[in-house]
Length: 439
Image (cartoon, rainbow, N blue to C red; front, top):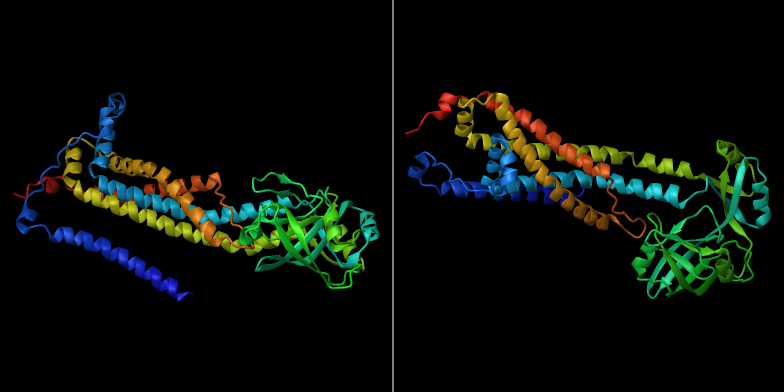
């Protein structure tokens, strides 16, 4: 528990409560007793801008004219209600934004960028003959060699260890994209680096960087265990998870001074035969590890189950906040308009019609709040995404349409529940008592 965050939250809550209470009490305390005992004078009627649009205004029924009149009569309260409901929509959007962005990132990583069914890692670098034997396994459709080795990227005073992946230029299993999400082909020369690494180091396409490769047990022509060379950044690829770098077989062979070897392989299996192929692969003495793409994806999804709980809890808190805003606003409106509502009841309005009048008023305010709520929610999601992104993980700003729909639907649900709760106050409305004059 970060107690600084707890204390800051409590302090901010008390500060805003104090400011709101002090502002209300200060205004009430400034009223003279004699003035307070007088009957409140009716408010001066004003023409609202909708009345100037005659065809539209004449199309409204008497009830809707009263609703719009009341909405624009107390502009400060209407503005605060719109502000509060917009904040509720923003709260809902931020809660669901995490799930949307993470879902997009992992779906892109495991279904768009990676196409292999299994990744095989060899216990030591091997020649192409091992790949031919894997290709001959029943149920294997395609095999592609891959080289993975630890490297250090050096740019000026900055250093970062990462993984360099060597692939065939015409590979079918790894899809790279640029910053515009267009397909990116592996160049014959140079290195392709992840955009988060490029951003962190200030690297641009065409820059020269120092690449230090940790050789390990490779049997290369060079005697040293490290190779340090200057390489050109040929392209920058967009990645949502990880900061891997990529080279074509030719470029990697030129860098290492050795080619035609692999540290692993990507495999595509026939439909329904993946488990069988995996079992046979594990029987090979040179195979160190076999990882299924879907197995890794499902493992990540299992770890992220807490996200659904987090979203659920945040939605509950947001719902309580939205309900409280609408409920309190409606109660205050009822207390201020008791004489008006009682007069409408005398004129023949039923309980249902009075409740509908207040409900439609809240519904229209909610409708007015949707656009600013969505706009502010998107900006806040961008800000949160910026805060949570780091060198290893880019939290892309992805908000599905269903997120907007759910946020709006939840706010309208809060309005309905608040309307049902405040409707009980109208049931106890005593016309005779309310309409009595205090003079």
